[in-house]
Amino acid sequence: MTSQMNIDALVERRERLLGPGNPLFYDEPVHLVRGEGVWLYGADGKQYLDCYNNVPCVGHCHPRVVEALCKQAATLNTHTRYLHENILDYAELLLAKFDDSLDRIAFACTGSEANDLAMRIARTNSGGEGFICTNSTYHGNTAAVAQLSSIFEPIGGYGKNVRMVPWPDSYRAPDGLSGETLADFYIKEVRAAIASFQADGIKLAGIVLCPIFANEGLPNVPAGYMSKAIELVRAAGGYYIADEVQSGFGRTGEWWGHAASGVVPDILTLGKPMGAGHPISGVVANGALLDHYRQQEMYFNTFGGNPVSCAVGQAVVEVIDSEGLVANAKDVGSYVLEKFTELKVKHEMIGDVRGSGLFFGIDLVKVRDSKEPAPEAAGYVVNKMRDSGILMSKIGEHDNVLKLRPPLCFSKENADLLVSTLDEHLAAA
Ligand SMILES: Cc1ncc(COP(=O)(O)O)c(C=O)c1O
Image (cartoon, rainbow, N blue to C red):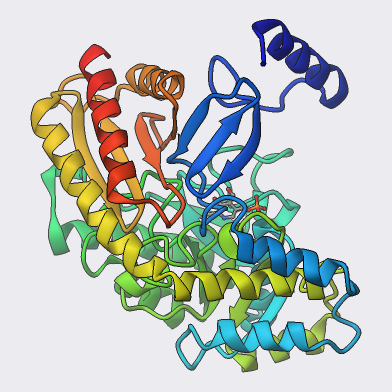
């Protein structure tokens, strides 16, 4: 049993050993000791429905993934400078999930490393240095990638090679614009960013976007925005880097988040769910781009794409396929969205409900008409849900959007528990 004393002692020990500034979720931190499927278990025996963790996409501790990991770890683990079938089998399996133009992969360990490598590939191929990103995002923590983070300002501030454009918010849309005119409003900003690079004599290398704008608050992207933005970037000699670290591997009810816009990226990055908890990430690109980059720079990542990681990655893809998890994300996802939309009718404080597949944002507002964000209410609900055994979080420019992205094996029964508990806490918020 975890008593409050034990929790306090763990927090004190953590601060002493890891130092302050290491964020913990919730007013009352959660001490987890076991996971299975969509369920997590606390040291005090409490059971939590996981509606937050996208990394264990196939469910916590999936037996097939655990078996693949253990078997390869007990046999051999080296790195990509030795021949090994696992690396090639996995590369083949994964690349078959993409458009034919995306036919090469490089492995790394984290989403940050993947984005860092993607930026290098864009730089060497374009001969440019300039990158465009949105004004409310996060793409990782290497020195180069941190420059694209508008959520946390990097040490030393921003360099000259980054221009941030407003993310395409269709809920708090300027002047009540919608549809194509709204897309065009935001496209003007992309055009202005490109012009500003030109004015400063900085050649464009590319645009880095999460195709579903997950960290921005999961907007309903105005139709035509992606295709027009990418067309402008390509016309200026830059590349479209799709950061699929959050949106990939079936999360949206499609294998890849970019499918919704129909725009195939030039370079694409993978991470989080790729190893269902094991650290593996990757950059997928057209062979010509990756090969040209490799002629300029030797890239080696000690742990990236090792035989154990590839065994795990392969098992993850096989489980997603054999258990029909992409279709499940679509099916259960639309059920949840429907239920959330019913909650919106009932609770004035829900300004907007959005999402795709099993990724949802519930935008909480003080007054529905004014759309004034309600970050305190979001904090209240997240903590109360935790007390009731349901894990979720919040995101967005105003920190007021409830963020839910459960493992892809989430069922309608799980959804009913989520919705009824949420209903209760929204009523009291
Ligand atoms: C969209 C996106 N890209 C990249 C990253 C960085 O991934 P990692 O923490 O594995 O370096 C994150 C992390 O939250 C992310 O949300």
